[in-house]
Image 1 (cartoon, rainbow, N blue to C red):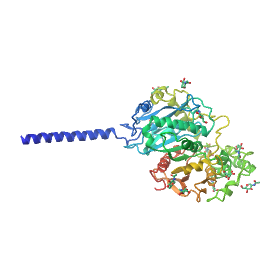
Image 2: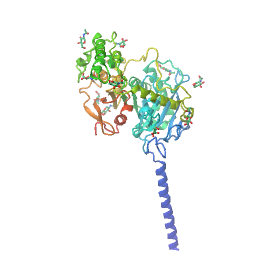
Image 3: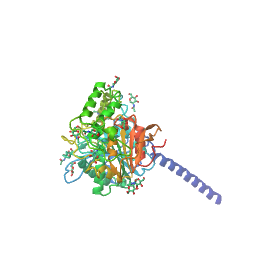
Image 4: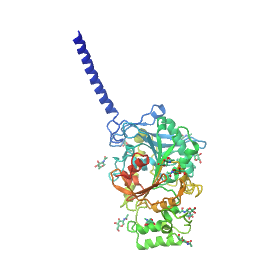
Length: 489
Ligand SMILES: *[C@@H]1O[C@H](CO)[C@@H](O)[C@H](O)[C@H]1NC(C)=O
Ligand SMILES: *[C@@H]1O[C@H](CO)[C@@H](O)[C@H](O)[C@H]1NC(C)=O
Ligand SMILES: *[C@@H]1O[C@H](CO)[C@@H](O)[C@H](O)[C@H]1NC(C)=O
Ligand SMILES: *[C@@H]1O[C@H](CO)[C@@H](O)[C@H](O)[C@H]1NC(C)=O
Ligand SMILES: *[C@@H]1O[C@H](CO)[C@@H](O)[C@H](O)[C@H]1NC(C)=O
Ligand SMILES: *[C@@H]1O[C@H](CO)[C@@H](O)[C@H](O)[C@H]1NC(C)=O
Ligand SMILES: *[C@@H]1O[C@H](CO)[C@@H](O)[C@H](O)[C@H]1NC(C)=O
Ligand SMILES: *[C@@H]1O[C@H](CO)[C@@H](O)[C@H](O)[C@H]1NC(C)=O
Ligand SMILES: *[C@@H]1O[C@H](CO)[C@@H](O)[C@H](O)[C@H]1NC(C)=O
Ligand SMILES: *[C@@H]1O[C@H](CO)[C@@H](O)[C@H](O)[C@H]1NC(C)=O
Ligand SMILES: CC(=O)N[C@H]1CO[C@H](CO)[C@@H](O)[C@@H]1O
């Protein structure tokens, strides 16, 4: 009797053990979310949402036209609400972090332009789970440097008017775009309330360098319900000052240093110098860029000259002066990505707008006079500028400037920063001298950090750093959110 009972319990225990092992295996298989977001097998996201609201945005694992499966993601049109908004909504795409749990960080990426698509240019060309980098073959590949390796990432179309948005707008400035963005955030976090607990970080490129401090300020002003406080910002090739400073003031020196790469003849270079001389800009840089700065930098005028424009006489791509035959390849990439969004089967699957004319960038945003907001280094004035105020409200603020970028020239940004007073003093005491490394441990540039502001000069990259140096782009976002140290090899 005793023995039988024992046998029975042993068998029971054995069966129970088997069941536990089997269950554990199953759990492991179904929660194996450390796999990449694209090219996954189980394809479960580390994010999940309870609410019905979120459910309608869910994107499945077999996105039409992609040659691999992707993790569950969330995408679609988020309506904007506000006194003057009647019928505007913008597309977003949200990805969970590639880890067993979703982690504490949410990064939002905004594109430049104004008028370029964050989803097309940011997600699908630079930092997303899959990218169109093999543009010769017109197909897409898994991105081994996806930002989802370290954070939950959200790509947002901004401002209204970008091609993956609907609705008309007569908005004309960064300040307007920031107000619309806050409306997006309010509705987004109401739809995905589980994300309200995350640490919120902002990132963007080019014109987003102007827009992002306005966005952060608008969040601080409005204190919208449920929207987390902004922890910090990463700006790549950002416009922090006027075009006159970032282009005209430094164009001659840039052209002189890069004459060969830009294919400028001696005559072309002399033309740039003539334009620069005409407004007495030629020695501004060498006389005024000092570490630490020697007082406020003098004013200047480029009313009657255009040295930057004169530099365009060379044969090169202003976004990457070192790109060989860049324009041809890029136009193909620009075709492949919009085509993805023009496919009706895709549109239905990812809830994107039914547009057969989706474009990577729309021209004439804020037409005809351009962004009416002042540059962040002088808004509302030089004494207490927006950029300085937002740096002071951030754990970390990172500005990356790229060597081969003739649109936003590194030394122009450097001049603006040496003229900026934040956290009690003006400029940096030392130039960027600390080596920084990408995630493959290759040195890619130099950086300096003072009073929560990092300024980095990047070697060997054009304007679109996430395209040119994706492993550095991943290192930069990891540095921002405090999950790595890019000064360590
Ligand atoms: C859209 O994608 C579907 C699914 O891959 C494909 O069958 C269809 O041919 C595509 N449509 C166009 C117009 O390319
Ligand atoms: C709002 O926009 C959608 C999409 O463009 C359109 O179908 C709808 O008719 C518009 N509604 C109003 C009230 O304008
Ligand atoms: C892209 O196309 C090329 C040529 O057809 C092929 O060799 C390559 O495997 C494709 N890549 C992907 C990710 O489909
Ligand atoms: C940037 O400024 C520094 C300091 O004046 C100068 O040495 C360097 O040549 C400049 N670089 C370019 C590309 O203009
Ligand atoms: C020309 O520029 C130099 C250097 O920036 C400055 O010292 C000088 O005063 C300027 N001359 C005039 C006439 O503005
Ligand atoms: C530097 O700041 C002063 C105001 O203090 C301004 O007049 C000047 O234009 C600024 N220079 C640059 C390069 O931004
Ligand atoms: C900036 O440059 C533009 C043209 O390039 C010119 O119209 C404008 O007056 C300039 N502003 C200043 C302050 O020099
Ligand atoms: C620049 O000039 C070199 C040599 O003359 C040439 O090989 C290269 O293709 C040119 N670059 C562009 C973008 O035209
Ligand atoms: C600025 O950086 C310091 C040192 O890392 C940190 O203690 C401080 O909290 C940061 N400022 C803000 C506003 O977070
Ligand atoms: C910024 O300024 C505040 C107040 O002056 C000071 O307490 C803080 O340590 C400064 N932060 C940094 C990173 O220098
Ligand atoms: C349609 C739209 O985006 N309208 C916004 C433009 O900007 C103003 C603020 O200046 C908002 O109030 C509008 O709602």
